[in-house]
Image (cartoon, rainbow, N blue to C red; front, top):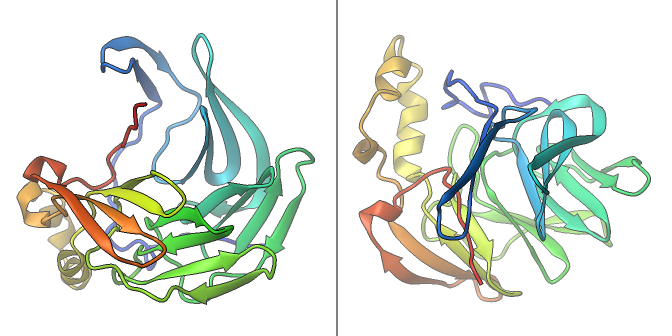
Length: 253
């Protein structure tokens, strides 16, 4: 099995430095403590189940929990590498992938290969489970997308979702409010991304691009709810402070 993320699939990837520093806050965003971690997270695939995070990056799966301190435990290794893609937890198993798809049994450690993503692999989309299917929305490779695909676990089959998104969710953050409601914050501007992919082919432009002011990127300034049953989007707030990409999102209560 082979899974790689190349410059072709992530043309806007920078040479930024990752850190293993962990900062923990309470619900009022008061600093509780800081610690050095075992890993240096970058993109990867994050799957949350209650207070437990599963983090897939490179050739490993980590389980991250909080006891007296943050605990990072490697629970699985593979003979391939993965940096970005889709993922969810279903029936005690992690389903994840980028181009190839895999099912990892948390109880036995068994890894099974499943149906491949049906079109060219994409990164930084949104993953959500709806009606026992994984929905993978948006994402990008050489271009940013507004469509999505869903995976049926029983049939081991991908199909294209019937609706397209009105705005990009590339690099956006999300929280599932209920079965059909997905709260979305931010996202990379599709036109800016697609133009940047072309411009970055010019020698010397990469340094200029990554030094531009935040306003240049025109990140999506809305908080909105995507209704997965209809494909409709309801905007519930708009502020330039919401214009984020790759941000954290926290639900309280």
